[in-house]
Length: 131
Image (cartoon, rainbow, N blue to C red):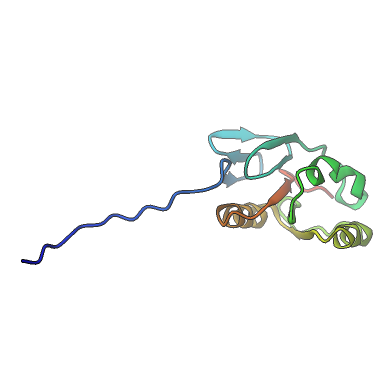
């Protein structure tokens, strides 16, 4: 006798924090809206990020983020892609840490994918452009 078994597969998300949406006014992490720019890892919200112009960012600004020992850091620059100073990119390269710059919506999608793959990452996400 052969029985048909019904199986239901569910995917368990490994990240504690998930970015649910990005708009011109807020970033929704889990069920909480953040109207200011933020820094986070898949495990914790590191806090609000000062709306310092992206052109003025330096390695020192990322000390709290680097303190989490990420293998990759995502920088979401608001509605458009704004490149930070080249020296910042070089500083991450010297540390052997990936540094990816993209608009905030793309950074949020990338964050969720990498976080649920179990990657060690951090993100800095600007709500409005950091230009």
